[in-house]
Image 1 (cartoon, rainbow, N blue to C red):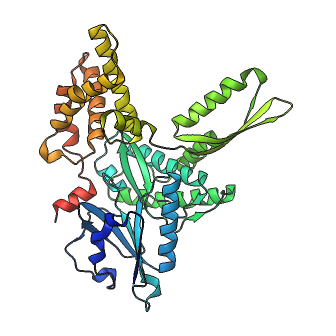
Image 2: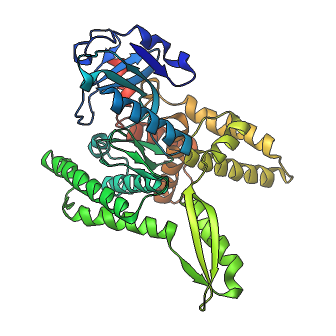
Image 3: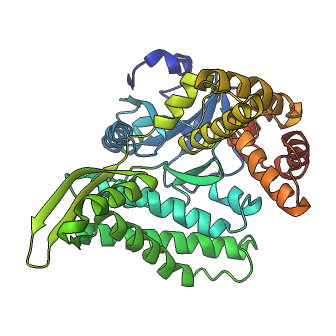
Length: 410
């Protein structure tokens, strides 16, 4: 038996003592846990909680395990949202070639399943949030040359970033990596996604979790429409007249950046009507705002969260300058914001609610909650009052993250 781990290997050293030669379904170990909500898998999948981290273990053939291991590492290198692969165990049982390997991935922290999104919706339109997130993930995969082959809500985990639902690929078993996908490959992947998502929404409807008035059949066309709209925005060609070249190109690039993408190549071709603009689009390098926020405050946050917090720091800085009638440096503003605004909100989170969401996400939602309360009251209610109301009315009913609920049950 052999183990192959991604570096650094010590992050999963405790897993080495699990009973690897035994069929996964027969494992007996105190670190094995059950999670309440999980997708349907054609393979045996179990979960292990070791040293504060939840891992997913999937038993399959060595050929498929090595393939999925390679594809998940490639997705990580390209910055496409997917679960983090930890390693594979191979040569476990030569007599059973269909289950002689186990793929190990790290369960996404603060993740939620699509069932949980519908059971305890945090927005007014969970269907729209899920479809938008899944469509964007599929487009990102296609731009990177990946054919998913099994796009579904069950094969996806979701995580909130400043109130925006983001989708992460969980299962790459049927994926294929190409230099570039053809229109036919993309269309077939979309058809497969529509079939699987439609079936899952019908299951939700049968369980009375789907909002009233939502028709799973009608959502088939909606998924395709959203995919084609986003793909067209990222790949469309347009004719530019001589006097509008510079600002039109800048406008298009800005729009791409807002959607989370970059232009890898800008091509201008002369035609009788004008210059034809074509962009070769790729997934944007993520983390700019996150790194900036971390350097200023030490806060670990998602990109949307970081952008929101940086804006709040700038607003606080403007307020300080107005109050003191003199300029305030970015460093001073960030430090005072951390001490006077952010830290008090995080410290006020009730102990039994800590861990429901990342601290940065809680703060972002408190800001949004403050805005709603202030609009209703016709005055600024203040962050302290908004936080107390948010903890009681929004955070308390929020579902526990899978890994926290799992740890509590042990």
